[in-house]
Length: 418
Image (cartoon, rainbow, N blue to C red; front, side):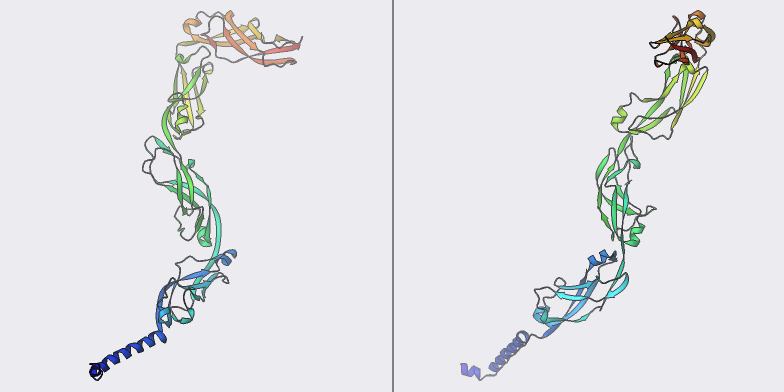
């Protein structure tokens, strides 16, 4: 059977196939013919960056360049090549400012047999780079609220705070110069309380236009921002009336312009108001003859802010016709002294005082001139004071407290040591 098969033509066909396979194996494995392969978009790594930085230079941050390389080598090694084990690097340490084209170095991962492959061709012979001046500067952080506060609340950009309140930017000098300040931006549709949290930063120029910060380094990249929100309340403006000169609050009409203002503040500060009114000052009715108009600055308690824009209030006080006035002469004997310092004697030199007494008509009809006294208090006079001295005198009407003087009086005394 074997002899018959060996003499047939099928035996020679079979033998030819076996020989062909053995030859192919010999050529493919033993001789390892060189085969080409192209690796595309290999990223180019930049070295020597530290040297550039020390020189105040940097590479312009365009998109990282890539390179395509065609290799030739034995098939077993060529098949293992890829972008992860083939490296292309450019040394920047010797560069100066400006555009230039640099050579590159091709290296391989240590797992590859570099003697079995070589670069046959490349997509480009040199790598173009642009070396630019690098700079840094410190800029302030401002708050930007892009939203709305709830009704009855208020946000004032002047109250914004950030920690830190300044950051440092580093990068291409031409870009750094465009930046004026950084913004911490908060977007809330209905803010009804103070917001605190961490926010990223947006870089803007002097006109508020955003600057592309993708190629700039910001240190730190975020800040802890606070956007204080305060309550808003409307309060009426009043004036405190000090009775005197025979006049009380019932004897005058008072108007204040503006009648009210809007204030903002924390709940704690607003609760410090005794009511929904605020007194802008005090008016001594003894100094109001018929009509008095005075301007008072609106000075709110600490923690409250006047958001109405009015910085002063005009108070008008008018006397009604119920009161009448009468001139009275106070004789020297009706000038009294009190609290004379020990070791001093005081002599009244003023002979007479002319004063105007005011009060309700029915009380004025009962006024007796001899019941009007001037009283001088010497409690503020230092011991050892000698000579003539003029002091204010308080005018009183004996038994009729509802009457009072509308004049300021002074009495001259002669002080001597006893």
